[in-house]
Image (tube, rainbow, N blue to C red):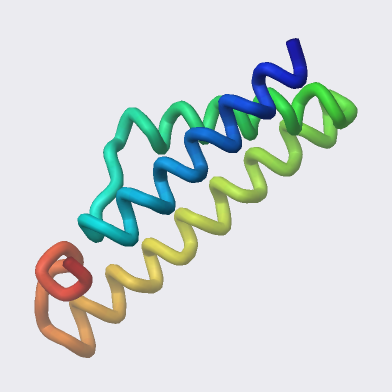
Length: 86
């Protein structure tokens, strides 16, 4: 079963790379498939407490980066976040 999940992950990552190189956009469902497969594999290979710690740490880092980009776009560029960064 683990090999099946790894194979699905490889296929989804290749599809993401292909879509990004050809169309410069990636389907949301494909990102979600890759997200859940990598999360499941990470959970399988780690201690549960460390898994949740790393998940919340990563979410916190992403929120911090988005907040910094929002402040930069609002104060320096004088635009909205979506208009400034696409």
